Amino acid sequence: DTAVSQTPKYLVTQMGNDKSIKCEQNLGHDTMYWYKQDSKKFLKIMFSYNNKELIINETVPNRFSPKSPDKAHLNLHINSLELGDSAVYFCASSQGPNSYEQYFGPGTRLTVT
Amino acid sequence: KNQVEQSPQSLIILEGKNCTLQCNYTVSPFSNLRWYKQDTGRGPVSLTIMTFSENTKSNGRYTATLDADTKQSSLHITASQLSDSASYICVVRQYGQNFVFGPGTRLSVLP
Image (cartoon, rainbow over all chains, first blue to last red; front, side, top):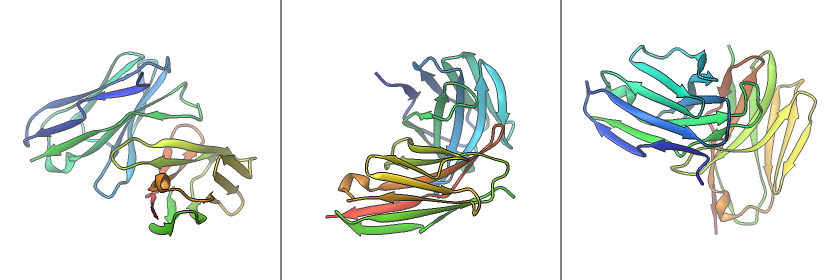
């Protein structure tokens, strides 16, 4: 019973392609997040949605577009992939935007060639 | 500028030994501070979460301290086990929304 799941786990694609990463949580949480972890293992928040509404949007290129069809899902679509997009992307969820606890998914390793 | 620094960058200890990881932050206004453990190839898992009024919090062999005046936190691991080998990430939440992540400390526990 995975709490926060992501698909795919690995994604290898060429520059210029468009790809999506899906995230689902079965915890009944209202808030979901996308993080990027670069090669130096630094985690940075990208987006946060609360009840399907965007509440955090860090400085992220417009090529990245999150979509939340419902509270349990937050997908990340990336257009015109660049080499610098190669990283591990983590989805996370919390009960609310001010909740202390966050639960992370297993990550999606994106490699752009 | 809101920043979180961690030291050491990496640490190697023998199984059974204790160790302490450090976290210094300049995030303001402060909401809470978290320590996460991240095993290789997996997502972070929360170890402790501390608010302004909490000085110490324990979770099994993990004990976190917080000094809000000096803006420092430490994570002490007692009687280390091989499974403690991981990256330990300090995260400070700014009052409101933002999370500021530290670069992590890579701990290796050797038999």
